[in-house]
Image 1 (tube, rainbow, N blue to C red):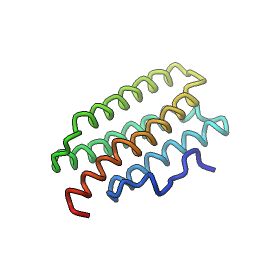
Image 2: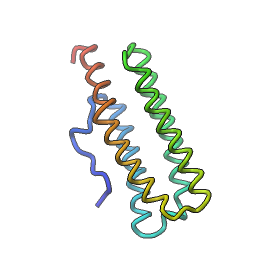
Image 3: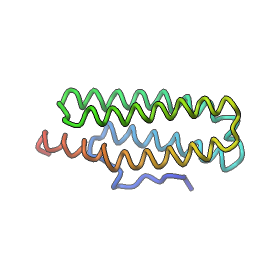
Image 4: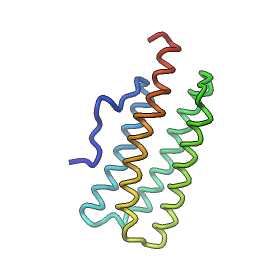
Amino acid sequence: MPYITWKEPYNIGIQLIDDQHKKLVNIINELYEAQKIGTSQTIINDVIKQLENYTKYHFDSEEEIQTANKYPQFDNHKTEHEEFITKLIEFKKDAKKNNLLLSLKTIDYLKDWTINHILGSDKNFGEYLRNLEGI
């Protein structure tokens, strides 16, 4: 059973962004599965790198759409993204030190941040865009 099961309320109504969120959830689930079977320390650096690369791609997509649509909460949203990236950098440094608790700490943070961000800031953005487009 995955650590995070995608649920309908997580959809923000922008297919591109919803698909990207699902990919992020899959990466977090991959890390969780590895931790569960005791291999997370071996792959954590690769998964964090994958997450870092995909997160940058995803955040760039969101921010491009927000800028193009003059989203009024853009600065706050971008700050949340920057804080997440900063946390990933910290995790990467910890992983290089072979911190055995890193995977649990990382997984919990990633799950909480991702779900809270989707249900909060991203939902607000989705609503803004749908209202703008008259959907």
